[in-house]
Image (cartoon, rainbow, N blue to C red; front, side):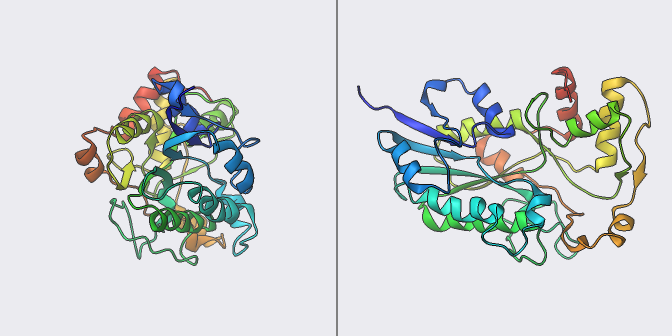
Length: 303
């Protein structure tokens, strides 16, 4: 049979990719291997999987994303965080023609420090200072992964996201559904009222990726709420919107918390992404954080 040009989606079972696949209209064009058949750390296995496929575009969602576990591997380039996010990406890109294949690499706000010396919110062209002393080990590995992609492909595309959220997902919690679950269990701890961030609506990301797949824009893009919030503010709003109860969240200052925490250098405090450029280039409109929460409530967000 004639080979049709396919889009390879890595990390297909994950929080973000699985929703993209759910919403994608032409499923038959997607190749969505799982880890048992397509492992970044097994190049021969990847080669075998791709042997009879004609891949025109790659959407690389797969990554080691456990920030705390990553931190415990700091400095260890044999640890899984580095092996997947840097070496694995290097193995993956080598599978493809650097001129002919369109490669879209999903990355993170954590390639930026969120420190008061280099505060966000960060626009697409902000320079990444990939210094392991100011970034989490996860963030540093992702910054290096971006470099691998940008050095290899002629027209690389990087899409950064931040605290990706969706209404339902059985296999992994997220930035909004986790506090919701803790609230239900009466275990919600005080939340930072002075840590600044934005969030990514995975449904909006999916729409944006569809646009990217349809045209050949290269460069760096951000998918984020159009404004900044704090964990305290957004979870307070979420709980009130979901359960109709006000002021159920206690607040705490991140700076106070970090005084008793040896990881303070690497805790993004002044974070968040900006996507003015992305919206203009791709002709998309992203929502504010409140609008995103309202949409998730309408979709019956479930811990």
